[in-house]
Image (cartoon, rainbow, N blue to C red):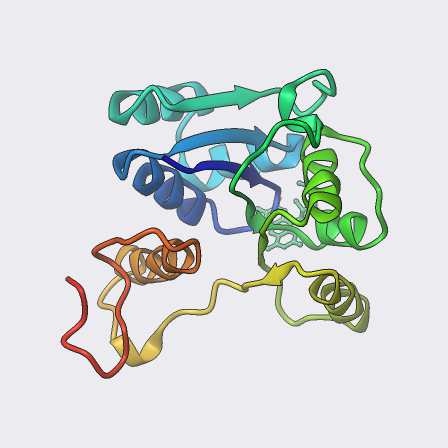
Length: 195
Ligand SMILES: Cc1cc2nc3c(=O)[nH]c(=O)nc-3n(C[C@H](O)[C@H](O)[C@H](O)COP(=O)(O)O)c2cc1C
């Protein structure tokens, strides 16, 4: 079982966060969940669902989910002594990305990323904005040079997804594959794929 910190910020793309968390739980992994204030508002707006109801849906899949308040600096994920397998921010706003690039860690999510960078824990940012400004690109380059992976939610057009859900499934499958988590959604080009 992998232990994954999943951060949700106020960028668009809440269906991806929901999709990833459901897959991680279904596959038997543990999710440490943190939302920013804007992450919560955008999620409820885009999913047209109250966060409390969504958490219940997650818990119906598995109890292996811990939700932290973004102000709770006393929680275990604020410390490098607590080992996790990866930190993923999905979706990651340009605001949070800019703070990460500049070492600002004034909330729990940012602190857990700061810890991941110093402890060399895999860090994946599903950075969502378009078009990208020079500031966004410079911040991304800085994080990439520190070992973070910038993974924008780019649709896999060549797999010809028939719906947003299918497109999300393929993208989330790719994130899981990146984490070495075998799953039925990842499609390896040039093979009869693993589905
Ligand atoms: C509906 C909605 C969609 C948004 N989409 C994006 C986005 O795709 N990318 C982005 O960087 N910011 C987006 N924003 C703006 C962020 O929510 C805002 O910059 C916020 O301060 C980010 O804070 P956080 O990183 O602490 O969540 C969006 C805001 C709203 C209300």
